[in-house]
Length: 382
Image (cartoon, rainbow, N blue to C red):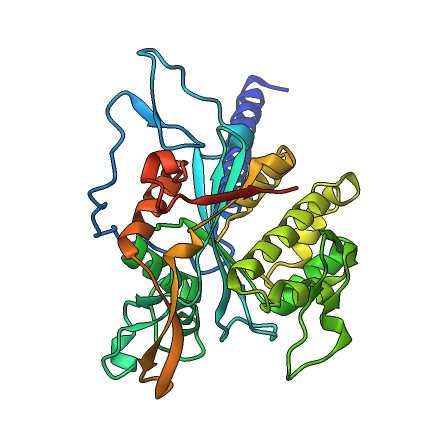
């Protein structure tokens, strides 16, 4: 090979390497873009405008709120940066919605279950806050479609935001409007959301082989209108398929707060099943099989981070927190949409916002932090 041929060959090799690097870089960019791309319409949160009540004590410089109580712990001057598990952010806030729709789409449906999930990637902990669906709240961007009415039940925000009614054109569809409603009324600012309709919930439970719950006293969910035996759950260990788990989660004979406790119990059992050795290996396939059946703006990267953290969680690391039941008083208000009175909860919203503020910081009100009259309630997975 002559000198000129060697030079030409070297130039061609350099061009080939440059093209390969360009293609590889482009492919990596495409991979990163898909890895960090939300799987559904993303929510966008406005800046919260409400002010913390006077009873709230802000965290002073050089101190952080304890993750379990509202007391403040001084930091050392050279505190090391805490390690983050599973390559996640320090904290992730997710709006969880269980919709009452039985269809395969998310065009309609009320928010039957509303939870805010605080995922702590530093302390490996998940805290789940229940929001009662019958709160009478201001819903942004709906008054033009409701003849000037801007208040409705909290669960209506999800319904009005989804495409069925065409009331809302903002980001995130139903979950987006529900998130904005929570921010406007309570200062809750979720970053992502997951909404599951009833049919998909049943399929998820069946896909992991059912769930197991223990009922010490049994539960009879029959009503005057429905005397079906499927509503009777005897005392003891129950192994439930998807339809049975959904039925148990929706029984409200004992009241909405007891219903929420039952839903928490089912969520604990589902987490235990998802982290069992025989199911963990199937999680990627499960996620793929339910793509499109779950309404979410989580990215594949975030789902991977959450799955990683879920395998590290012990039962006591999953905490369910609730507003004190004595804060709520049942009442009725005239609703022009239904042309009649509807049931709502009357509650001191300032107290609720105080609880929310501590929840967002990783604490939860106790008698020491908020007074003996209305401490928060906490439970963990059994």
